[in-house]
Amino acid sequence: MDGSSYYIPAVVMGAAIAFKGPALIRGWRDPLLRSVGVLLALAGLVFLFAAPPTIAEVNVLTGVPNISAPLVYCLLSAYSASCLALIINWRGGPPEVTRRLSRRWTAVYSVVAVALMVLFALGDAPEERLRDFDTHYANTPYTREMIVLYLASLTVAGVAMNVMCWRWAIQVHGWLRAGLVIIALGSLFNIPYSAAKFTAVAARWNGGNLDGLSTDVAPVLASVGAQITAVGFCLPLACRSIGDSWTTWSTYRRLGPLWRELKPVSVHEDRVVRISWWSPAELQVTQRESDIHDGMLSLYPYFDSEVRSHAYGAALAAGSPPGQAQAEADAAMVTAAVRARAADPEGRVISSAEAGTAPAGSASAYTEGPRDLVRMSIALRQSPVVAAAREQATTRSESDFHERTS
Image (cartoon, rainbow, N blue to C red):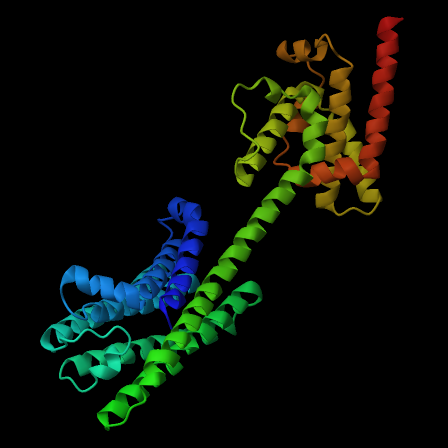
């Protein structure tokens, strides 16, 4: 593999971090998001520092031949620990158990990283090797143990990842299961990678030469495995984010009929601060719900409990379940109140309410409890009960208008 074969995966990991950057910054306190960011960063750093041109540059800058070897091995250990910690945090459970397991794996691989540096310092590797360090120094005391340690730790991480992923995958469904299967497949590449490296090193121990397994085959396996694993981690999170956004925008869209119904009587148009169209979907929904509540508050004196009771009975008679019938009744009361408000441009009903002489039942019609705004909005567009209430209210408003002008 040439330098580009290492740099391309590093760039891919960097692009993934850039794509998830805003979410990572906003949710850095979330252990799951933080683990994703650390994993992607470490994967990118492994490929960056494992590239032969980078190895040569690091060796020159530090003045220590082959210092890149333990550096890359330590990054691989950190990457392995981050994968295991991410799976543990992703799976969830009691916070104290999750923290304890994450810290345990982190501690184990921290000890491995320290041991790698110590063994490198004790060994003797004066000749710079950009591609075949493992096989060239396979018989060097201490350096040999360093190579075996990093390969063994990587194999343990791959096996542990597979076991955890498969155990969890059989308990879940959907995109999460797909992600876990992909992660398990990516982690599985650790085993043939280590096997290829071990085989090449063992061949050197026995006087043979299978260096091609270490210098040509193993890097390809590492690259493919790391990228597959990264896809497995990102896929369920991305799909969940897309699904959440879709649900939020769907709620925003379904609130449209109720928002437009109340728009003529809402005071939101006079608000000094309005959110921009590119604001987050959650903020857009909150703003629309706020506008709806403002409109309903302005209609407070015009709510008629008799209209609501009649519509509720009609909805039940038409076969609607109680929850849906309540939404239809609320929507009927709102649409009737909008037309009653339009038929009272002088605000006489509002003045009566302020004076304490509002019609009986109007207050209770508004304060009977929380309302399902989405169901109300859908009922405004689809319910024949609401359509009938709207038509009756329009007829009544026109009759009142003629009486005032005659």
